[in-house]
Length: 258
Image (cartoon, rainbow, N blue to C red):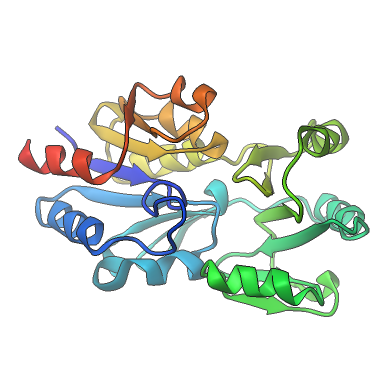
C-alpha cells in the first residue's frame, strides 16, 4: 500500500520550460492527502522558494529542501545538516573569484547572494528564489546548508571535475541542472533525508514512490521500491530508477485508483 509519495520539483513536478506546478497536479496531490497518502517535495531549492508553489496544500506537505540539508513539516524543522563553517568560507571565496561563476547560499529557509549581476538576480527571482543580497557573505550569520554554484555559460565536464578534484573528498557534490552544481555536507542527500522522513512517519521503502530527473535524485530512488525517472532524464539517471514515465500525473492517477 502506498503511504508516501516524494517528488523532485524542477524538471519533474514542473515540466521543462515551465515555471509553475499545474493545477491538475496540485489537485491530484490534494486528492492523495484526502486518501491519507503523505506527500513530500524533495528539491535543491530552499523552503521559501518551494512553499508558495503549492497553494492551498502548502501546509500539508513535507519539505525536503536544499538537496536534503533541511527537512521541514508544518513550519517545524525535523532535521538540519549545515556545512562546516571554514570549508564553506573557503569554497565561497574561491568561487567568487571566477568571473563566469555565481554563488548562491542556502540557510534554513532562505537564500543569499553577493553580486551586482542583475541578470543573475533576475533569473533567480523568475525561478521563485527569494534571496537576500548581502555586501559580503561574511554577513550571513546562520549556518549554511547548501552552496550552489551557477556556471553562467553552462556547466562543462571540465568545470565540474575541477570542483570534484578540489573538494570531492570533503563535501557532497551533485549536478542539479544544466548550469548548477550543488554542494552540501558530505552526508547530505535527498535519500538520507527521505530515510529520516520514513522513520518519523513510520513508512517503509515498499510503501514509498519517488519521482526525479537528475543526479541529485539518485539516492532518493534507492530509498523507494517504486522509483520513477522522467522520460527526458539523462540515460544514466533513467537506469537508476525502476520505472520511466513521461509525467508525474499519470502515476498519481494510478495510485489514486489503487
